[in-house]
Image (cartoon, rainbow, N blue to C red; front, side):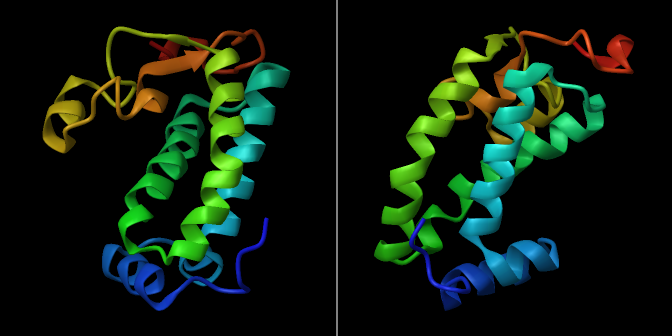
Length: 137
């Protein structure tokens, strides 16, 4: 992916204002896309992490969208070249669920919807390797 060494000033400022991790602030989209690619690969292989880790993983996908309006045209073009394939793989390896994985309260508070935020309304098809199965919706 051809994104400059660090995020644009707009992306960096937004990340700092929102209190995102230093890795997100310093590496921006390459870091977030690597994380999303790793998440998708883990889901395809049979997700083995804890439910709270899954929530963190799908939050990374939301942050990518959240940063869109702060990205330069070049940054967003690079994201758009990688994201559709990753999202398609995610959808293929997950199943829809009727409620937001963060809960209905958070969905209402933040305005999450299945059409716009599908990652919050899908779970891995294969959960046989998770260690906290009782926590998963």
